[in-house]
Length: 501
Image (tube, rainbow, N blue to C red; front, top):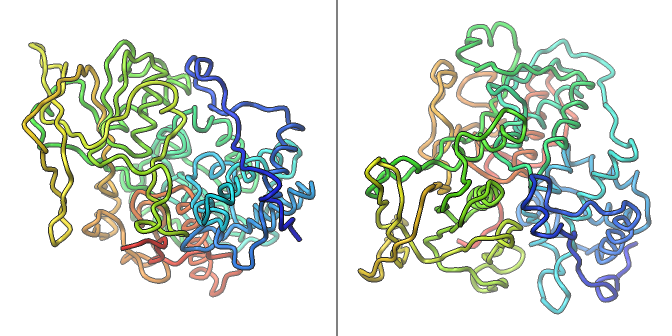
């Protein structure tokens, strides 16, 4: 039984960060590498704040964690110092807790009962506890390959090696199927590799998990675009089922703003991918912010990633623009009551390091020099309005224009869905109006024996949802191949987070 007074004895404490001047000089993770004994003692104290609620909303599939992580259980195990059993309970529901512990925005914390009232001192630091359990698991050798006792004789192709594809592959391999993961890039990991900056998750964290998957028997093929390098006919002939985990990488562009054609204006991923390749040792980035005034358009996670990348590359200035008003710093119970995901200002470590954020502004036009390279932006105060059909429009509040220097502009304004690819055409699969791949209740697409999961099905979303869908599609594929399945299935295809509409 947890300590019912733990939250009254101890205040919330997040993981300490390295000094800002230090972390701006390298690409290492922003959080301090603590002495393991001190770290574990601090995290045990944080786990003691968990009350083992009668109804733990933190692992609710709609309000909290879609994986159904058994948070009160492993919090109490950590409180008691039983790290190995805590590792077992955590890995029972999450294939990659070291990914979610670093990258997930923690809807579990938003749904924590202690988040209802400010007087309770804030939610349990669940994300910190999870990451520490995961790191302890590796440090103490608790993470070992888990191999199937019997082979099913069935073969499954997984297209895409992001978190959804890797979760599906690991589950299916452990169920006894022969799984081959195809990745069109030269390295594995999808956005975990080339989209997430090193300062958020060092790639050695990804590589050690990939080594475990290999030891379990999952096979990987890189530099292979399915549908081109291997045809659909070959795919059908060689495999009994196919899982599409191709992501939703088609970046949203801004074709309407005058001057968009100028050089120096790029989509966010065109900046992040070569920056990550540089960290992998592939040579200098083709798009660098060094010595430049950088404008990041878009206020979300991807914009923050560009922000932190630009500062580390040596930008003269970084300004992030958001069309919407600055959110409140605390939850507005009328707009986003507990336990839904709160509409609040989210400050990432990158925002604390340098630069500036601007709200209720939009670019009127991009201005270039005689060589056709962007040099300035014209900025206006705006308001975002919606009509009766929900269609957005950005309305200037006045004719007043502010001019800002801009040598590099990065468009981080979201994703439009799955990229157009020959694979889908040859499978006879059409995209939905949202740019995603639809499926039935069994995760199967309109192409028989072809399943979908992750961002390709849901649209650009959280890493925790990608893993949850990967685990669920593995259950569906296992059932399709054998007639039954004991694999867990934490979510259903049409499941959505709890929200106020």
